[in-house]
Image 1 (cartoon, helix red, strand yellow):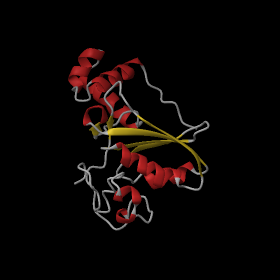
Image 2 (cartoon, rainbow, N blue to C red):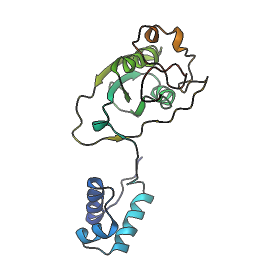
Image 3 (cartoon, rainbow, N blue to C red):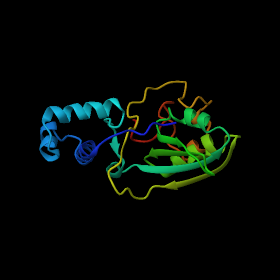
Image 4 (cartoon, rainbow, N blue to C red):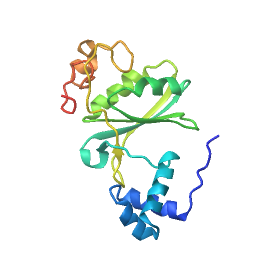
Length: 192
């Protein structure tokens, strides 16, 4: 069972300030919260050690122009699908959830047809997947910084572990998929 983190009002204020401005200095935070700079530093260190705060670098999905697809899946082994897709360059994040759909995935790319091809070929095609619902994220209320794999090393072994050959794939041949950046057959612009 997950332990609930015990934080006080000053910690919550620090978290709020850092959420609004991650570059805010400890001295500026100290003035707002009414603590000394060393006390703020100590609290931030404690919050980092507890795993409450961390730094994440990536693309701001709201401003990047990329499409984000939310995929809800009902399947028998969500951990296996999550593990397989987690290394895909188009994969942003995934969650095993309670309810009818037990897996939620977020994929990102420069065109919708490639994202739909990934869903068709690598999710719907799985024998232990019973239902898939995919929807495009049309608007983000706040900035959403997501780690996107920007440097892709070419390899014969694709990250999803499947036997993939873009040149023999119908989706790729009729331009419904830009291809996997790892294979060297990618026709898009992000990972050129």
